[in-house]
Image (cartoon, rainbow, N blue to C red; front, top):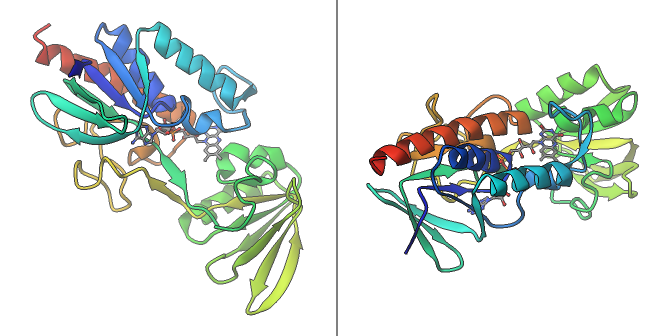
Length: 281
Ligand SMILES: Cc1cc2nc3c(=O)[nH]c(=O)nc-3n(C[C@H](O)[C@H](O)[C@H](O)COP(=O)(O)OP(=O)(O)OC[C@H]3O[C@@H](n4cnc5c(N)ncnc54)[C@H](O)[C@@H]3O)c2cc1C
């Protein structure tokens, strides 16, 4: 069985930042990533709010973080983590059939937006459709947008957008289902008002139905809040010794790349401290 001092699960900004900090502390580190290094960031067309870059393609920032993690000494294993087994020596089981021993684990598996479930939704991401008003609101400055949602996510999206865009139209898709997304880039949506179809013109659509944490590894394993997000202390450690978490999977008020890399830095640093103690180094 192969050993790394620290195993990081998820190669998004939080996981890559954790890997950089842990590797630079002198411990051996592997990142298990099931899809593509960079996480959601890699699929975000343009990022305009990450300090240091006025504007950068998401894939470009993802590539830079990945290169920095690898050049710091971290190894990236492209496989899905299926299970973490706790103990003095922890084990991480991957979908390729391998199991790794480690002293500390950083869970940085992110979360995913709840979708409308309407045909064409995936293709329109970045072409008029967004799941994040804070991230993409500025692209619709002076334009007309629809916010689809109900509850606190939709409310805070509307509050954020009202000072930026010309008009915010709200649609509660639980009461008034969105039945079609029209145009590519999106130029209107069709809604069903009690059996009557109506088309609303718009420049953009923000789907604000909230997010779901990637809870496959954390549910019933570490302490979570009411919504399933992982609860951490100031060192980003969970209620289990040596099990840390970082990024969007963590219970916190702002989920952005800047906050993900901050969490990752803290988690990576203290996971390395924990691993060194366990290894008597
Ligand atoms: C559409 C959209 C646009 C956004 N735009 C911006 C923006 O402009 N600026 C900004 O600051 N923020 C933006 N955000 C938010 C930002 O992308 C996230 O806050 C950030 O990516 C969180 O990083 P993370 O590493 O915690 O999670 P993620 O980026 O989600 O990365 C998690 C990684 O873990 C992997 N993974 C999950 N489960 C497993 C497993 N079991 N085994 C192995 N790997 C696993 C995933 O494949 C993924 O690569 C945007 C979000 C969305 C949805």
